Length: 111
Length: 113
Image (cartoon, each protein chain N blue to C red):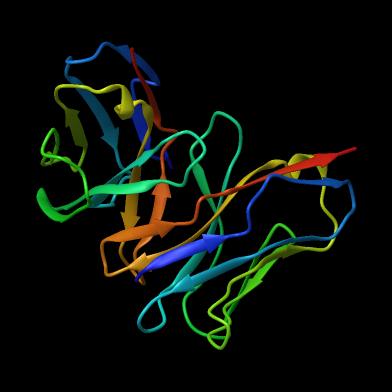
């Protein structure tokens, strides 16, 4: 099928800790992959993207590499901040019409 | 540039009522998509419109309908509301070059009592 599976949350870390949120996908071919972030009470913001295998998307200290061998797109950040507390969604494109999202991972960073 | 705008921000309805949600895409974007996000879950695709034509529909009942206007704004209508329709409804504006990057609005929070 066509789906996205994310690491279950919630995830709680201390400030300056290393972050990894796992994401794997199933698909035929190599769809574009995305990470979106949702802050409390807001809509989704695109955090980063990768449009082909082996691409690395990066933004605001976050990185994710499109791994076709493991069908993964794990999100990483070397040193998280309190302001990174949010819900993170991994997503893939299906056809030309829609995004398929994972269930989301709630991240809380404590000072 | 203004981002995607949605109205209203919040809405409370009772079962059986009808609701209309509105979305204005980013200037120059001709395509919009609608998503439903139930609390604690990822968004689910409802519709996509391009140049006033429906280009895709997700697995939602016929109670859900939408349209796009000549100025590319869009409305989502839901009839005969059920408690399970309570959700955040997100509109996305699509930039179609070089690929279908989607920019989301803040959403409309619908509560059905």
